[in-house]
Length: 236
Image (cartoon, rainbow, N blue to C red; front, side):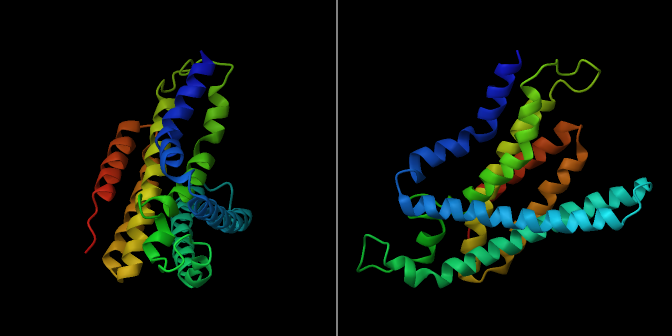
């Protein structure tokens, strides 16, 4: 039974994002470059937040449970702000690279707009999808490894929905990163700071929802509601 759980949860986690990649991104080399670049930028933000976390934990009192809980909250908030700061840096990098990327375009007479740089002309998702792939991979890879067995979920009285709930949360976060990328880049381009604030605040809220585990209904439903709202976000 462990193999079906593994493959089922893996497909739930990455199925929609993988479908978007195969249908829209894989045929365009330029979009693949942006996807890989976005994934690399997210990895750099993770490296920096991990370094700060390592230093803070080293100098903290490990016997104080309240301090360790506060450090956990601090780590989540720091990670969110660093991810959004690097998203902003990625936007500025693409903005500066506009002239250089013009040489790679097949349309030599038509300038590449910021929208094309960020997420292509047919689907507004590439810049954030790289973030989402890496974020989802790091959040669920150890869980998937454990689901491959041996063992039975919930045998010691724990929740039987742990793996599938984690898979759905990973799917939500992966798609949220795609929507966050679209809203963030569009807001920066139009200098709409309400859009930037909406991305940062919603990212913080969804990340803090993980503190509600193992009350999975308390974290999954708000996360999917947030995903729906960000997917329906209208530029202002």
